[in-house]
Image (cartoon, rainbow, N blue to C red; front, side):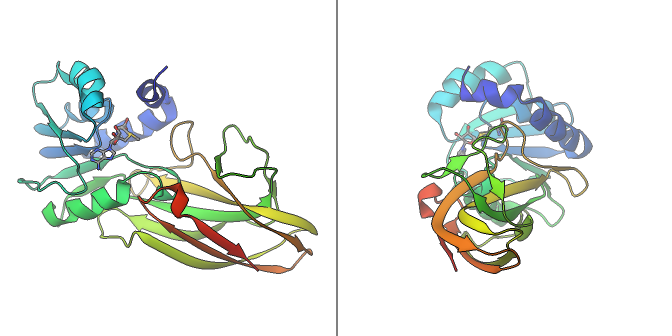
Length: 251
Ligand SMILES: C[S@@+](CC[C@H](N)C(=O)[O-])C[C@H]1O[C@@H](n2cnc3c(N)ncnc32)[C@H](O)[C@@H]1O
């Protein structure tokens, strides 16, 4: 199975986007980072015209073209959507280049660029994401995405919201936060867990699905903590900059 097969077979992901598109797609709809074209194909039923943008020529050759050739209102455009000069103002922008905390994909550079070309009432799918943080204990030594709760993460704090990104706005890609959490038990902490929730529309919210924003485990320096102790976390990363931009400190 390829990456695009995995994405299109993630029923929970596809169903929630399908619902958002069904409720909102109309007029001129853009699909930024179209990949297999699955969301553009869904939008074609509700929109007059769909422009499907994709940066990777091999993806277009092997997937997008084959999947979208049956739709006569879809145009495929090979481009970098984070710098592209769009010539028409869309009624709807679909951009599913999500990943946990928006660090390792270009969702924010792309949605920042599209702000220059949208109208006041352009609808964005997804609407926004918000991120939460927990502190705990694992046996990982590298940054790792959690799948089916593996690797095991022993929770030491409540899950706390620390960031929100609204895609109809221009967002600062450089995240720098100081977050204070309270330890629920005595022991040793060595990992931060980030989880991202997606508001596909303002009302339709999803947590991680198999191919959408799996929780991200980030090893930190080790610290012995007591139940009730306050833990100060410094968290820095660049949205769209990649996982190697992540920096942490705990005190
Ligand atoms: C997570 S996949 C999602 C594909 C599709 N939107 C979906 O929901 O199945 C992200 C896609 O965005 C494309 N992409 C990444 N950066 C891009 C950019 N700057 N401009 C256009 N496409 C980009 C990738 O090549 C990939 O096909």
